[in-house]
Amino acid sequence: MDSASRHPAIGSARAGVFFGLVLIVAGTVLLLERFGLLRFNLLSHFWPVLWILVGLNLVVSQRGNTGKAIGLVLMSIGVILELQRFDIIHVRMRDLWPVYIIALGVFLLIRALRPPGPSSVNENADSRLSEYAILGGGDFRYTSQNFEGGSMTAVMGGIEADLSRARIMSSPAVLYVDAIMGGVELRVPPEWRVTFNGTAILGGYDSKVLPPPGDASQPRQELIIRGLALMGGVGVKN
Image (cartoon, rainbow, N blue to C red):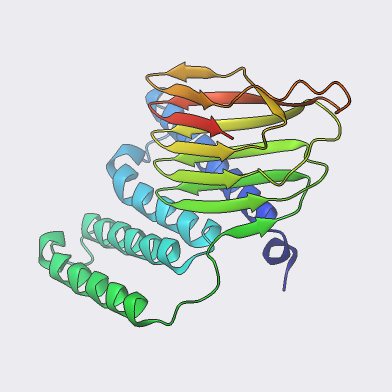
């Protein structure tokens, strides 16, 4: 078992780095095309490649079989579109939709008939979290007794993180949360004081956190949430 399998946050961070590098390369190629320094015509291949890259990211970053299955479907759509563009195959996508419907039915049937397994919540005791979801989602529980913060990114997907059993020893802990056409929901302990310091564009932050009890003997535990809510939402409750 490699380190990414032992520490899910590492795998999620690697997926985020991969997707970020892909966007940088794509933007650079488009910029060179605009100035006439490159004649690759990336825009003509944009949608097929986008399907492939998003699907690949799901296969790499998602731990559940559902996310990986969706990633494989997206990759197959992108490959077929790209092969059509190069005139290698002549199969139309509308002719393949019945195949995808059959595959979806088989997947749902297998999942329904499978015996119930352990909880699907991914539990982690690391002091820093790093979660990344694209066109998918995840349910996580962090129980670190020395929580320091980290990062969470949801792009057209959703993340639920339960921090109710965690504790902040060195206050404040800073958590960067980016919700781009997606949503992130956090559950924090009643002792935590939550402060928002992010940017909302056609999105928003929703706080249902009650004020912490006024016990001067208890150390201050403050969580600062930064990041971007772009046509998405970030919610916190206790």
